Amino acid sequence: MIVSYDTIAMSYIKPPYHITSEILNLIAKISEKIGELNAIQLNRPPAELRKSNRIKTIQSSLSIEGNTLTEEQITALLNNKRILAPEKDIIEVKNAIEVYDMLNAFKPLKLKSLLDAHKILMKGLIPNAGKFRSGNVGIVKGSKVTHVAPHGNMVTGLLNNLLDYVKYDGDPILIKSCVFHYEFEFIHPFNDGNGRMGRLWQTLLLMNKYLVFEYLPVESIIKTEQNKYYEALNKSDSLGHCTPFIVFMLESIFKSLNSLYQLPNVSLQEEDRISIFKEVIGNKPFSRKDYLQHFKSISSATASRDLKSATEKGFLNKSGEKRLSSYNYN
Image 1 (cartoon, rainbow, N blue to C red):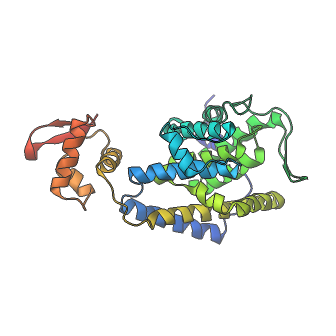
Image 2: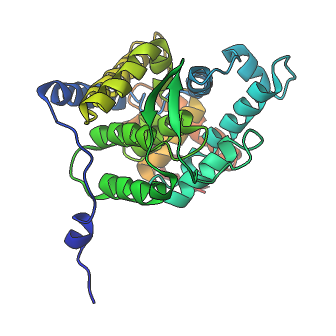
Image 3: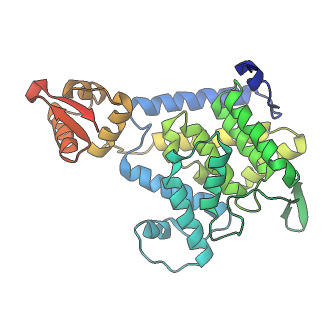
């Protein structure tokens, strides 16, 4: 029996939400901002900015869950220095560092990848890291139960449906990633770690389409507006659709992109240019002229130094001499 793509695509149940004029306007603004960042080669920020943004992402996402470590303490851990802090908080940060270093290894549309990421993120913190919960769970704020999640025996089916929706539905990934984030929190598939996993997986879904999201600290905006984050989740719960949460997340994404665009004196260094050009050219051979055409703001001498250094470091192979030189990535 042959099953067509259309049959597979129609087999999921689409989560409820409305695409409003506000959402369309935010999508347009975000797309325009991504285009501007691409034009000035900030779609992959410079190395130092990538590092600082990654630290902000980890600190913000864990802080939302009650972690007490500062950006300075996380930087110290990244540099293999000892810090004085609660053991649980240190384990959470070390786990998050490991997961974010592996971002490109995860497959965002595969359930196994999601379980693998949770296992790393929560190892040493809960006994069933990397496994879905089996029983009932409710979310309590103070003395009030604010959300009762679906029964544990429904989790696998609900997540498979959600991933099929992301894979096959025709709406923009900017919308679908927000829907995934909300529905993931609604399903609450794990006994612990759902918040940080939902934020992590939205990043993965977005960076699969837009490179800039790999190092964009959207979580820092969420942390700053944490009350609005929970308000958007609760309002979506009460309405029975996640439109308010989509709006909140798109606004947060736009603010994060805008903050990156407005950074002063951000300039690409040699390693940044070499890394970026690899994504542009792939395995094809290229000349210094090709390199210069992509990085129009640098001089011929700078281009020559870049290529010479990258060749000496083993990133590039070189054939020919002087103007006839040709390069390709290892």
